Length: 93
Image 1 (cartoon, rainbow, N blue to C red):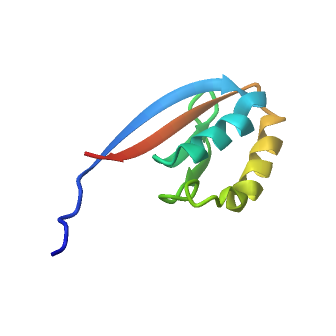
Image 2: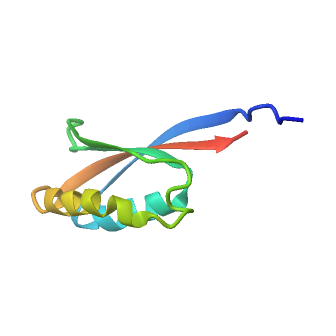
C-alpha cells in the first residue's frame, strides 16, 4: 500500500553577513539539507544570484557539485562589503 504524499511546510528567513563570511555560510546552509533555495542580494535589495538546491544533495555527500558556485561566490564577495542571504527552507509537516 502506498503512503500518501507528505505535506511540506516552506518558510523564508533573511540574514545579512559580511561578504568575507559568504562562502563559509553558504557551505553550512547547503549541508543543512532542508534548504531548497538561496537568494543572494546586495544590502539595497538588488538580486545577485539565486541558487536552487536539490533535496538530499548534502546528505548524499555531493558538495563537490557546488564548488563552481562557491568559487563564483568567493569572487563576488571580494567586490562587496555586505550581502543579504534569503534562505528558503522546506520540511515535512
